[in-house]
Amino acid sequence: MSHDTSEHHHHGHHPCLGVSTNLEDYFLTRRQFLNRVGLGLGALGLASVLSPTELMGAPGTVTASGAGPLLPRSPHFPGKAKAVIHIFAQGAPSHVDTWDYKPTLLKMDGKSIGADGGVAMASPFAFKRYGQSGLEVSDLFAKTAAHADDFTVIRSMYTDIPAHDVATTFMNTGSIRITKPSLGSWVVYGLGTENQNLPGFISLRGNRLPTGGAGGYGSAFLPGIYQGTSVNTSAQNVQQMIQNIRNSYVSKSEQRRQLDFVHQLNELHAQNLQRDAALESRLETAEIAFRMQSEATDVFDINKEPADVRAAYGNSQQGKQLLIARRLVERGVRFVQVWHDGWDHHQDLEDRITIKAGEIDQPLAALFADLKQRGLLDSTLVIWGGEFGRKPTKDRNGGDNPGRDHNAKAFSVVLAGGGVKGGYVHGATDEFGAAAVKDKVHVHDLHATILQTLGFDHTKLTYRYNGRDFRLTDVAGNVVKPILA
Image (tube, rainbow, N blue to C red; front, side, top):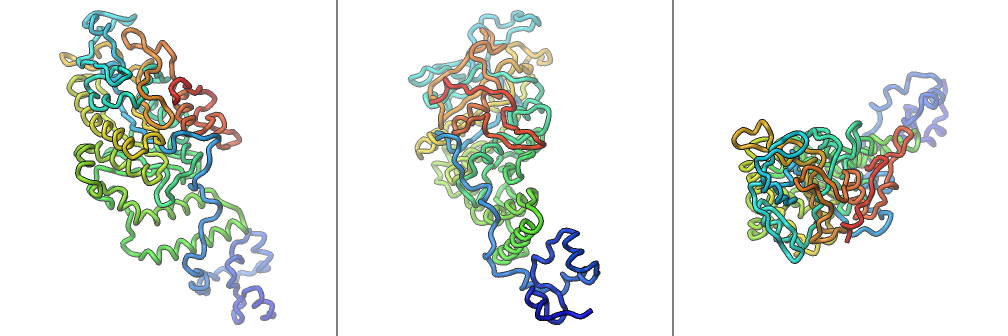
């Protein structure tokens, strides 16, 4: 077989070997490939004879395709909140011992109440009024309560199923049946993020993985770039917090060259074949990981904060987490989840809830003060709450130092900052705190309201998957308008 070398050279073929040096020639469908080589087998070893320098191109010349999935985007309408810090008290805190004062329980302590014959258990903690609003808060949150005029308490929350794993997944994803994207993933999908050198959604946790694994911060069928990045804040340094944040074997310039090459390959693949969502997500994730090498070592190092600021948050895991959360939103991260587990108190309630509240009260108060002082509270929505509440009666397994059993019919959630009123109580439970009875707020309603503060109509923030438009609130949800500022 003879070759016209001038023609081959024109098409980018090697003049001696008849081998193409045009990278596009190797992104072919099977039909295109067979047409090009005439059913020959000579092209099978092409990669081995191509020059790496011809393939690589100049460093920095190729960037990620498209407009960038994490670039900031406008919501449906102007939202007051620009970022979210969600402090998830996993395990279901007792609302009647924290945010929902029930003097009737004190009167009925030790007596049978309700249809199930449970024995009333008065809260061992005193409640006081705080601020100009006179909002009632338990002594467990006395430091946070000093900021009562800055937050709303929804006392009429309820959920579907009082089982920890199911309710945790529901509170974080709006779904109890199938895997769906988390709240943070939806927010970043809708708004993008302000800092392209850090993930848009970061989940701060301790040594233990969150209940349900990645269910609380996963992106499910949304592109993987919107999944939360899990960070173990109990580690001593950034290299331990975020594994493999540093490449010990390849310089940054070489990493950049490799990424540019992969982007080049992806562009050719997209032009000649099709765009692949999984490939795009992997590439975007690799880009963020590359850019994080310098920024993450700074933002997660709380030693760069003044000593008085660190002291205000307290020398604890939760203090560290909330200080990091402030540093993240200050740098443009869109959604920060703080995972604070251990609130499942079936027994020894008085002792154990004192410890758990003591871990978060000072840091939460410091967060409110810090955000306010920096002018960030008005644009940052802070959320504290668990997956359901507890019963007003003694848990039968509690013995001499009882706790409370699960309760899906009533719990409290605290919201502060961007888009919500301060010094406000929404809804009410019955006289014992057993069930929400006034202005009830379902989990879907809470999610709809959170999206509203960010500028989204929850019914229109959708993603088409398997032939259906999915949304965070499924086919339900009503915005709780009275709490909006």
